[in-house]
Amino acid sequence: MVLKPFRHIDDIPIGCRVVLFGCGSAGQAFRRYLEIVGRPASAFIDSRLSGDVDGLPVHRLADYAACGCRPGDQVVVTSSYVWDIARLLSAHGITGALNAAAFAVNLGAHRDRLLGMVEDGRLMVVPARDPDTPCRN
Image 1 (cartoon, helix red, strand yellow):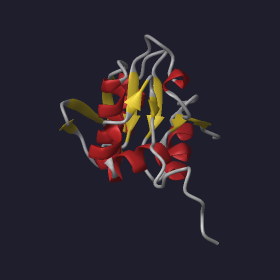
Image 2 (cartoon, rainbow, N blue to C red):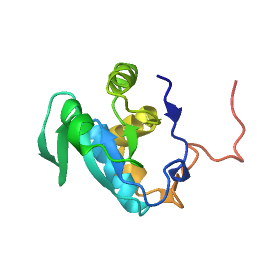
Image 3 (cartoon, helix red, strand yellow):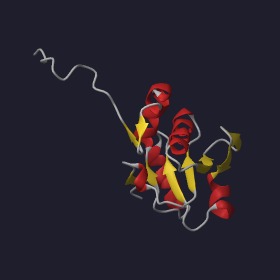
Image 4 (spheres, helix red, strand yellow):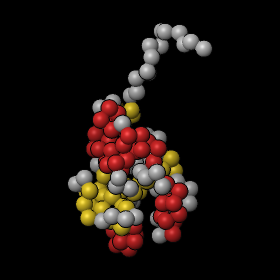
């Protein structure tokens, strides 16, 4: 299964239920990002955990596929195990998932700094140096 890349919040259809695969630090940071841009997640899927994380229910993949999956759900992979997860999703008949792993992992690693820089669904990253200062080679 080939996952579609997540590039911008508009890659997630308005009004759909967003389900994040991966409830680690990257998944939790991505959940906060979605909240900031007004598209809150509904649940997490995880290979190992179930219960609640960061205020959302966590479903095991088999349970989600059997009784939690709804037409129109948008699954977004936030885990660095993205290719293993893609195979698992395909095996459970779940298609159309987005690959937000790199975006989510960066959010997770720099959560406090980056989440304050979200504007119109985009991260507004400030250059590390003054653009008027010439680079040394």
